[in-house]
Image (tube, rainbow, N blue to C red; front, side):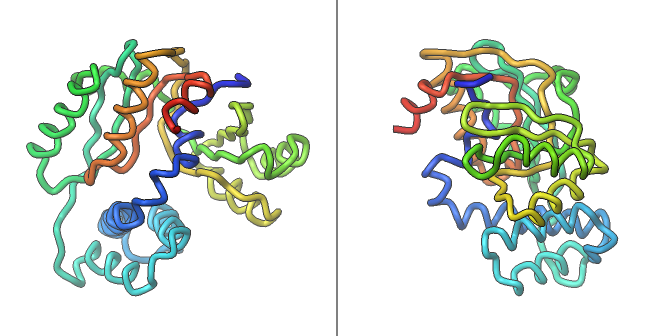
Length: 249
């Protein structure tokens, strides 16, 4: 879909993200702690923890912070206990939104997220209302300027990716869950810079938005992402890059 973009392939461009280093640290520390709590403190035996540590290093988190987060997760140090929660809802234009959160107070989190949805012409729905519209996959974004299409295809297909699509100024790469790490590592081995990478919920179809609804939806996504308890937000919208430029200016 040349000329269009989805949230996870555009949000890394937004200059506002650069000002949120402290917030990124907070969210990454929570992810490390819960990954260690669920799967143990050895990253070699815990893929989720391995990914969280890689994300922490990518934002230059000090090694001591990473170590303490692991120890809090395994119970070696005292710390707040977070619970994984998924919230589902709808944005402007009927866009399906899937939110992954880590919270130490579910009542507070759902109340605050409900306010965010309502403020931007959306609403939280019942569990399962939109989850069926998404598939769990590995998701990687590479800017077109960083690698040729032929080179990318050669690298990712050899490493086990299942699909690659054009999305405006980016390439979106999709992998089975079990091949995600091997594709990421293959790209890094070939010195191809990643704009974004995650294990996420990929929409099976997209809703095209423009004008006021596009701006409302982008504002909703930004505020959700900015919430301390929210780790990731996934949504099935498609917006023309001119609309994104208006929003980012």
